[in-house]
Each structure stands twice: as structure tokens, then as C-alpha cells.
Length: 492
Ligand code: GLU
Ligand code: ZN
Image (cartoon, rainbow, N blue to C red; front, side, top):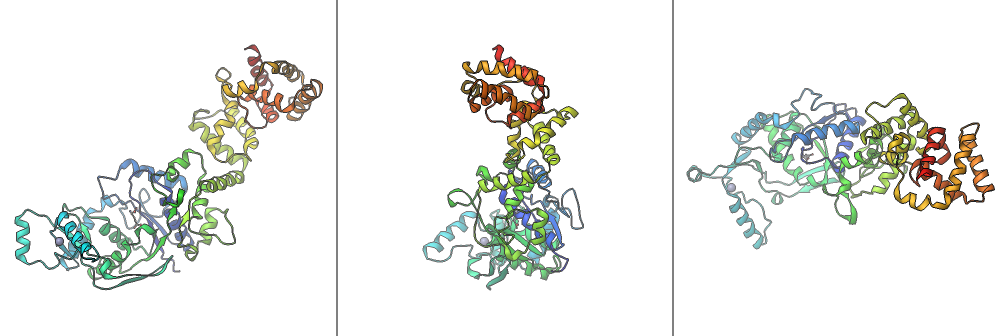
């Protein structure tokens, strides 16, 4: 492919970003990288009633968090800006005017009710329902009568009477018959331009060569292809009709389309839950695309290097949160200890376990604890539960109530007393020594069950029955803290 590939990701800033949207962004990004092209990020914010500034900010922040960097777009700029449609209204006005003047679009004075009524009648007669071209050829008299009634017209595109065919990059050759595509509205009666106009206008002006988007937009494509033909006649853009590829649906629970409202579709949820961007993107890449050779674990660079559009499938993809989590866990295991410690630090700061700028001592402690959890983490949100006991101040240290009731029973107190004595007298406060000596006295000499007595110690020292390995944890906590926690319990 030539080095002129230009693709775009063009969401509307309504609500929170969802995974379907991220998948679209990712495939466009990878396609651009693979073909050494340009990844354009455009904001489709022409619907003032639904778009919000908050949503816009979250979008940009999310794209940055994911590492899906754009070559042109908001805050980055580029030769085809501005990249927010709300700042391009004059352009759309001008294009609409030209389409009207040259006869590619016409004023339609029908009210919603009238259109609806005629649609019903069509259905009853067994015809395909749709706008019936009522206003295509109005006389001057009809127009002035409508105006006298105070009606404002919408602008409708005049669909050419022919079959529209294209070779979809994902689905192969597709055709739409003329009678299934009625003349459609480009501009509302109040002058607001619609998606039907602004999206292809910008794709033409921004010289987009490939449109990769969800299958839900399939029915827009024949309309847009017809519009590009008109653009060529009136000189909007460089006469390019982009190639189209429609990405398969993403299915959720019960084989229903994953909806924006499903909790597992919210990008912010994954961020909150401590997924790594690498892990989430790796998983989303598999929704409709395959690396080949059954490889399911790869970096975004590897994805981009291998992103052949021919390996995007037309079959619906199934979203599986378990698999997503497993891939994330793989990604965590792949991080170096230092890198994981870094990411855990951010997570611990976010939930307030660590202060905004942790001390050298806290950082060292975290680094020492990282290998203890490295293999067992699935998401970073598990970190506070596993490691808070290392960082809480002694006065704030509490033992989980239920765990204490189960494990810190009355008959275990002599074992705890013996443990304090051993720990105090141990010449070297090291994992192995702790293990050997506690085991020798408590299990061999006193005849206690290892599982029971060490769980009790674990709860007394870490506050929970489930924690990183006990003796390693003790070692990095240090002798004093360990003794003080067990004694604190004995005093109760
Ligand atoms: N703003 C549209 C959307 O988010 C873009 C669709 C397209 O890619 O053409 O659905
Ligand atoms: Zn009409």
C-alpha cells in the first residue's frame, strides 16, 4: 500500500468511552501504523444536546492512557484542522449550500407526521417504507405555499437511482438496491447539519483513504458513497472515495450485542479495576482479528507490525471478561519488578494507601514486596488488599474481623506467645530462619497443626487470612513491627 494511508477515529463525546469504541480506535491505529500512514483523531461533537466537554476530556485522557497516540487531532493539530466538528460549522454550511445549488440535495417541507403517515401507508401496501421523494420536484407555487404556512425545510440528499456496490475490506462485495435507500436528511430544519453530512464532508476534506468502523454503520455506507460522487462534482475534497471495512459486532452475555450500558463495556471500569492498558488492548485486538498461529499474547507494536486487514473476520466476536482478565495477568507477569512496583505505587497512591509522594523507605518496601505478589496478581486493584498491611501506621492497623474470629481463637494464644519469644531471640531475622525456627518449635515441639498456627500468625501480622507468603512478608516488615502486631493481639 502507498504511504498515503489516512484513517480516522471519530467518536462523539457522549457518555463514557466503551470497549467497542476502543476496539475501533485500536484497529484504525494498527492499520495506520502497519501501513506507515496517518492516524487522525476527530471529535464529532455537532449534537450540542448530547455532547459534553466532560466527555471530551475523558476521551482524550483515555486515549492517552491507552497509548493510542494520534498523528493529527485535538491538542496535536495538523494540516486539516480544526479537528472538533463544533469548530467547523461554517464548512458544513458551505458544503450544504453547494449541494443544494447544484441540485444534489433539495429542500423538503414535509413534517415528521406527514412522513410517518405515508410510511405507514407504504407498509400497508406491502412496499418498502421510506421517504417517498415527495418534495423532489416541488413547483414554485408549492414552495411558496409551504413558506406561507411558516414551514422551514430540511435539506435532503437526492439518492441516484442505481445500485451501490463496494468491495468491503472485511465483508467482500456488498450491494444496496436503490429502493432500500431513500433520500435522506443532511441538514435539519433549524439549520443543524447531521452526521450524514458532517462525517463524509470531513472524511473527504481530511483526505481519509480507509474507513474502518463498526458493522452498525453499514447502512450509512451506500449513502456516503453516493455523497462522495456528488462531492467530486462540486469540488469538496480531492475526489477520493475511501475504502470501507466494517468490523464485526461484539457480543456480550447471552449472545446479545454488548451494549454501552453493560458494566463490562465501560473503559473507565477497566481502568479503575487496575487493568494494564497493554493487557486490555491485547485482549480487544482479539475481538475480530487474529495474529495467526494461535498467538494470543502480543504487544501493540507486534500487533501493528502484523495487522493485515484480511485477517479481520466478519463473524461476531464474543467478549469474555475471564479471558480478558487472564491476558491482563499474563501482562502483569511480563512486567519487570521495577515496572510493576511503579504501577503498583500509582494504584496505592490512588486509593490513599500511599501518600502522593512516597518516601524512599516506602518505595523500598514496595519494591521488596513486589516479587511476593508478582505471580498472583490479576489486576492492580488487588494490590491494596494484598499489600496495605505493609504501609498502614501501627495505630491504624486492624485485623479483619471475620478472619480473626476464624483463626485467632483462644487456644492459639500460647502459640502466639511462643512465636514472640522465638522472633525476639532469632539471631538473624530472615525468611528461612523464621520458617525453620517457628516450624521447629510450634509444629514439631508443641505438636500444633502448621496450617492452623501459621494462618493465625498470618492474620495477626497482616490482618488477613489471604496475603503474600508469611515468612517473606515478616522479613520485609522487620522484627519490631512483627512483634508489636502479635503483642498487640495478645494484649487484647
Ligand atoms: N461519530 C460516529 C460514531 O461515533 C462515527 C461513525 C463513523 O466512524 O463513521 O458513531
Ligand atoms: Zn418532503
